[in-house]
Amino acid sequence: MTLIERLITIGMVILGTVATRLLPFLVFPADKPTPKYIQYLGKKLPSAALGLLVIYCFKDVRLFIGTHGIPELISVAMIIALHIWKRQMLISIAGGTIIYMLLVQFVFLPN
Image 1 (cartoon, one colour):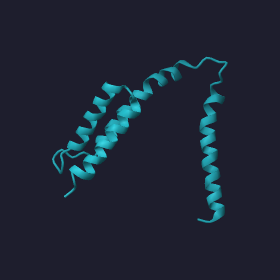
Image 2 (cartoon, helix red, strand yellow):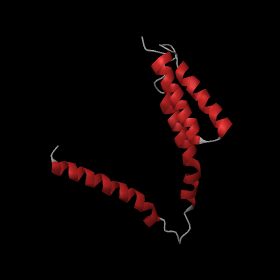
Image 3 (cartoon, rainbow, N blue to C red):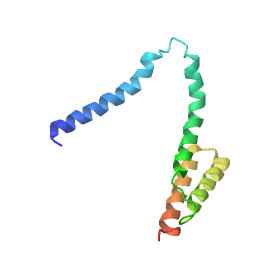
């Protein structure tokens, strides 16, 4: 990739990022009420996105091969326990991720 191509790529990324950040403020200005369907999506989409992420995380787990999904189940249990204990999303996610990485790197080694 030449220097010009790199600069064009960086410029397009910057333009895309700014446009996606600026667009909601242009479409839904502060002096007008937010449409009902946008309010509905704001309430429902976070739960739907989390559900989608959970499904995505478990899509490649094979219950009849290898570790049978044990590291994944332990990590999910750790996330749930941390979230019940601390009620901090970042602590829950980071704790579960760290436990999962430790389990797959040091405990459940691939054959």
